[in-house]
Structure formats: C-alpha cells, structure tokens
Image 1 (spheres, rainbow, N blue to C red):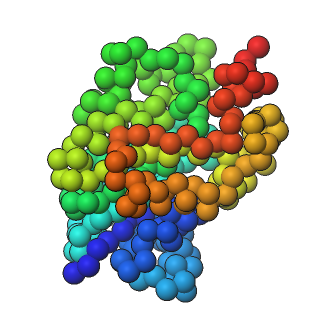
Image 2: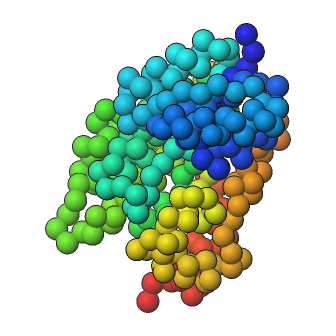
Length: 275
C-alpha cells in the first residue's frame, strides 16, 4: 500500500493544497455532500491524481472515525488537510460551533491516532480568531485541553445577555489555534506535525456568499482598507500549505500562519481599528 492524503472539505482551498502535496500519493476527498467530493475528484483525476471519495460529517465522531478507517485501509496516512467549515452567512451559531470547533477537535484527535511518521496536517482556520479579545490563561487552557466531548459545554461559549449570535464565534477559531498547539505535542510523539493557516478573504464560493450576503458591505470595506487592498486566491493558500506540509517545513509545528492581506494589521493599527 502507498501513501494517502486525506482532504476533509473539498472546496477550492483544500484542492489547492492537495494539488501541491499529493502527486504520487492517493488522495481521499471527503465532504458532507457526495456531489462536492465527486466534482473535486473529477478535477484532480483529470489532472493526473489518483483519487477516491467519501462522505463525512465532521460533527459526528462515528462519521469521522469511519473516514479514518477508510483512509487507513488505503495505506499510510501521511497528510491531512482539514478545510471543512461553515460561515455565519450559511449556518446558525450552534452549527458553526459544532462544525468549526467540535469538528476540528474530532478530526485532529482521530487522525492524530493514525498519522504516519513524517506526516503533516493543516487546519484551515480564519483571520477572525486573531481579532478576538485577549483570553485569560484559564480560558486558553480550557480551549486547548478540554476533552472533545465536553467542548461545546464550555461556559465561555454560552450566549450572554445582549450578545449578537456571531459574537462568541471567534472563540471557536481561537480553539483551533489552541487545539493545534496541544495536538502538535501529541502528533509529535508519532513523528508528525500539524499547523493552522488563517486566511483572510479568499475568493471561493464561500467568500462570494459572504460578499453578496447581509455582511457583504463589511467584507468589502475590510478588503478596501487592508494593507494589500485585495482578496486572495486559493492557490496563494496552497503555496503556504505546501511549505508547511513539505520538506521545507519540517521545523514548523504547532504554529498558525495568518495570511489576510494585512486586515488584522489594519484592525489594530490602521483604518479598520475600532473607533
């Protein structure tokens, strides 16, 4: 059996990273919707990659575990690209936390049990986690070390009087950073690495939904006042993913790479700063 790269969430970013790190390996494309996985498989197969597909619900431990079994049956898992996620324009806060928070923890835990020596993982997070207010040491520790099945019960994630529903969602992104740091220790015992990438506005179907949705004006304003003044492309994220998963990134683990065209810099020190 050969090597397997697992892509969880088969959108443009996951595909872009997979194209750079998967040649000569088997690519397992997993998505909640079989049609999405099939469409991505056709693109990669036509480009010369060996591909298979599976369905997965990352908010279900049973489903994620079944995906792990499917992947290990195909060979040694040397790469995991976790790019599944939903946005406030697409889903309720409860669903977002179940997918982005709990789901990420499940994927890291389950694949961390089987990742091969020399393997690497990438979690696609978000720029929004970098604009979360400072957490206490206790909150940081809770986000990093709370058992997966208890995560959604953390008091810091409970709605508070006067909160708008999206107000606490960046805590889910902060948990992704904290979880990757904690998991990097566990993955390291297997000789593997894991990091996050926090993109800004990347032109994908998801971004188009955001830009044309009720929060679109805010996103366009964010782009206009960023340091670079434009959105990004999936291939630009793919280039960073290739660094982190490839031979030039073997000294990097437990880290987060913010690539948001300077939006966060502008938020703290520029024209996007809260007045």
